[in-house]
Structure formats: C-alpha cells, structure tokens
Length: 285
Image 1 (cartoon, rainbow, N blue to C red):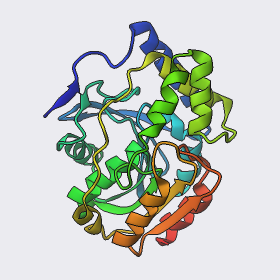
Image 2: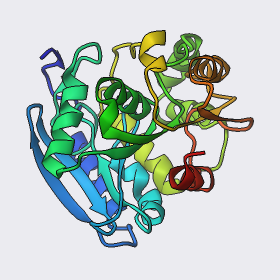
Image 3: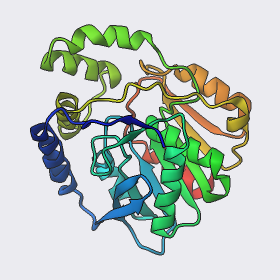
C-alpha cells in the first residue's frame, strides 16, 4: 500500500480536539437513534454511524474530501426511515477513522471499502457519495460491480475535469485568514444559504486540517462504461471546482441510461436533495 502522508493530518493536537469536539456536538443533534461502530480493516480502524432498521436495505453514505460523516446528520434522519444507513468516515480525512492518507491511484480505497462491507456483513449495497465520496463509490463499483445495487453521485469527481482556475482564484483569499476562508466558502457554495452549524464546521476543519493535495484520478471510458447498475448524477452548474457540464456530457455519452440532473443555481456543495434521491433509490429512475 502507498501512504500519501506519514505525519498527522491535523495541524496540532488542539486543532484535532476542536474538530472532534465539534463533530460530537453535531452528532448529538441527530434526532433518530444511531450506533457508533469502529470496524477493523487492513487500512486501520474505520468509524461508522449507523441508523435504521437492521432488516432494511443497506445504504452507505460517503462524505467529500476534507469533511466527515457529520455532514450527513440531517440526511440520516430521512434515509433511516427506509434504509439501514451507514455513514462512513473515509481514512485520511478529518473524521474518526484511520488518519493515514492513502494514494487514490492505487488499490487502497477499493480494498478498504471491501473490508468495510465484509466487516458489516453486507453482500450488496447502494451508495450516496459527494465529491471525493462519489469518486470512492465509482472506484468501488468499477472493481466490485456485483456488490453495488445503485449509486447516487453528487458533484462527482473523476468523470469530468477539475477546474484548475479555482485554485488560483482561491489562493489570495486563503491568505486573508478567517474572512478569506469565508469568501472561498461562499464561492464553493455558490452563495447558497447553508445551516450555520455546517458553515462553522467547515471553518473549524479549514483552520486545523491539512487538506489532500493529490489530484483525483479520472476514470477511463472503459471503466465508466462497465457500470451497469442504476446511477443518478446530480451536479451544480455553478460548480467552481469541477466542470459540471463536461461531467454530465461524458457520463451521458458513456452511460445513456444514467439519470442526470444539472441544478442551475447550485455550486460544488449540494445539500437537501432527498426529493430527487429517494425516488431514485426506490425505483431506480
């Protein structure tokens, strides 16, 4: 296995404690019963928030880069009415899983996800992933198609090109401290109103966490074309990090049966989409 980062992903122990304290505060606001699990995998401990009836169909939620499963708290409440929900912290991100950050170019993350399913005793699951989490879902589905029921991709990385221009636009603001980070957040969210607790969580992580610097690999035509399970792709037309139109065009060309939705007023971070996602999960279209 190839480890991208040998040092702590957190800028300090105090910073890590601040992120974890906020994580726990957000988790305490979950209005439905849940369990916290720590699973053993070949890639270290993996933290999972699980909710819903054990007999319900399994649904795995994968957060984006530089985030953790606290982003799903409100969605867990909705999905757990119909599914056994597993919100999984990805290793190498600011959550409660293994701190080691593995290369996206190797087999680590597909093997890790296979370990997660094995530990949970799940043979076949549906995925909802956002950004890097969407990439993780595709990456696993390409290698283990028989273990994937359906996939929901939100602002998916790995299909269309990243917008390099965003980095140059963001860098000057990031040098301005708190106000600069606020400006970058507004750009990423396309000035949409987001819950204060979510905005505060983003700020705390940005202040104390070393973000991934590795480029996200683009899937080949043959890899994407091999996917036969129902797929829903949701993208924001004002995404400053990914080229949403090229993402949708490419997926539609390679997988003409895929469901695609381009949201005109949304940016990279897209929330409150259960009205589109639940019907797809129920019916596959």
